[in-house]
Picture 1 (tube, rainbow, N blue to C red):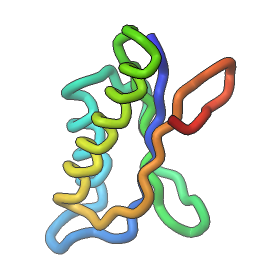
Picture 2: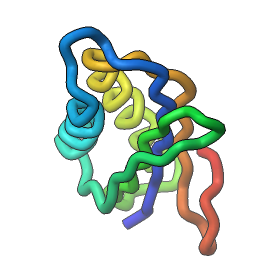
Picture 3: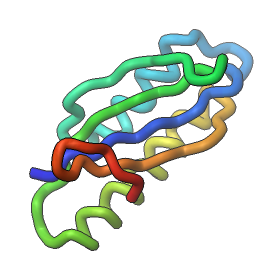
Length: 101
């Protein structure tokens, strides 16, 4: 199964939400459609960034990429209920490297 990764910048919390709610919302949303292999929070350029790796059911290349993009957008929508987001990046593992979709 193809492996994908999302990277989502988090620029702030919405009032009344704990920091843990951000990752929980991301994992829950993505997990409704795919197996989430890993998740972590990292700091990139001084800005928190969610990094989630997930698998997409193997079909055909373009369809897999579309599915990954749609799922990442759905995940972002869920996170935006608890946090303010920035840039969303979707990557695909290909020949040992992560390449933008």
